[in-house]
Image 1 (cartoon, rainbow, N blue to C red):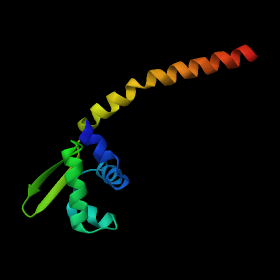
Image 2 (cartoon, rainbow, N blue to C red; image 1 turned 30 degrees about the vertical axis):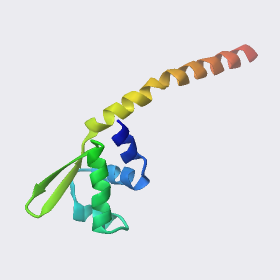
Image 3 (cartoon, helix red, strand yellow; image 1 turned 135 degrees about the vertical axis):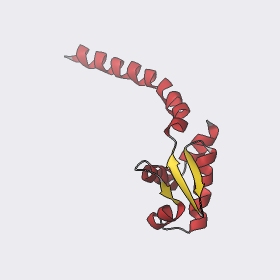
Length: 101
């Protein structure tokens, strides 16, 4: 999970994931979408793949990348744990507002 959070910490990597949510893209296609070099895009892709958030495959000279949504599951599971705290606070707020009426 640590590697996934590391990957998600960078806004460019989050933008790359958003781009990949529309479907598989080559490194070149991603490079055209972002104001950075091909080498920089590749570095971001390595971090995302290490985090389990994307999968890549080679076909000839091209590398195709696609979102691996299952990699987000540990992150969402961890975040969902904290939903209980929001539920408690919102219930307390509703109770307090109801008492004032």
